[in-house]
Length: 165
Image (cartoon, rainbow, N blue to C red; front, top):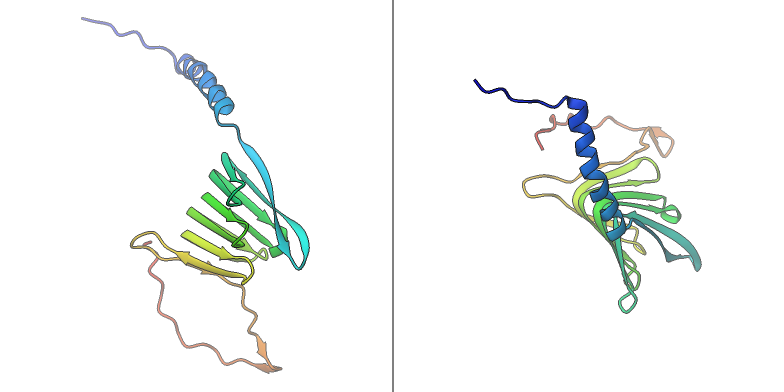
């Protein structure tokens, strides 16, 4: 009969941490988290557009910032917040492309979820594409209690949503 020696859970966790800590430090030194601020023009004023991510690249020739990994973007001039796996800010074209589990919150109430979103800054327009066999989801706050001082008529009944996405 053979006996098997088992380490207590706490020792296994400590051993795991001892192995993970040097790897995490090496990763942090190799791929440091960067915070970069890009400036977008709005009405002749320079306003900051802040992008935080695990890795960022800037091409001075094309004026394109590429952010990858846990991307968080804050653009107060447009009341816009976004998260994604990757984002590219095209300064010359005044466009932002988001990809990978994109979530956008505008004006603190309107939101959009998609796999890919292009934001055309000067037009204030979003173009969103879903993952295969999925849909884009948007939520907009609509004030329709009164139109022109008169009460609105109720909308017709809407079929229930299929939330299997």
